[in-house]
Length: 197
Image (cartoon, rainbow, N blue to C red; front, side, top):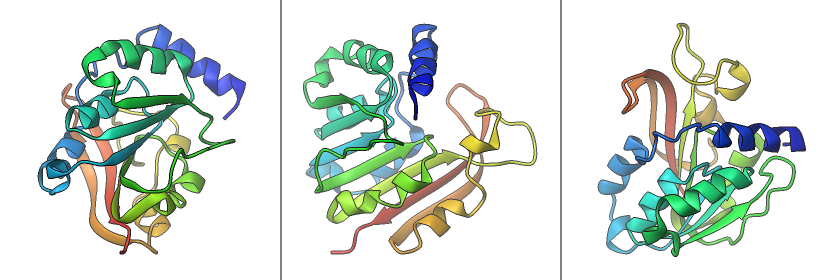
């Protein structure tokens, strides 16, 4: 990303983008509730965390979270929106396209929600501890008008996530039309992979 991208996101957050979206991803909540990760939470990484909705949720479940995003404004808003959990979160401003710097290499959980970066995605399993999980949800290209990015540049093609992560142990993959909590229709591709022990 460039200074232009950083400025764009800073402006969007300043103007109130996603202010009404304090809830975590329904997919993340549902998936974690089915795993035994919540009984012994460890280190988690939130890629392109934005205003921190998923980071706050993970911290509230006991995870120690590294939360990365390009927008200083988004990170600042995230820090003040939930002071109770923010002490368990390490907020870092980073350009995740041009200069990604992952803080560690033994995460129990890495999440990347609605941030399309194929070149970064294929490296993320390297930063998992053995048996760790990578959970990804992306806007998907769709034949009809749905909520989300107007440009297909910021959407994945059907089957693209599975293709990018084919060298990993895929334990869940789902694509289709879903309804976000605010009632809008979204086309999504979701995948969970596990790092082999």
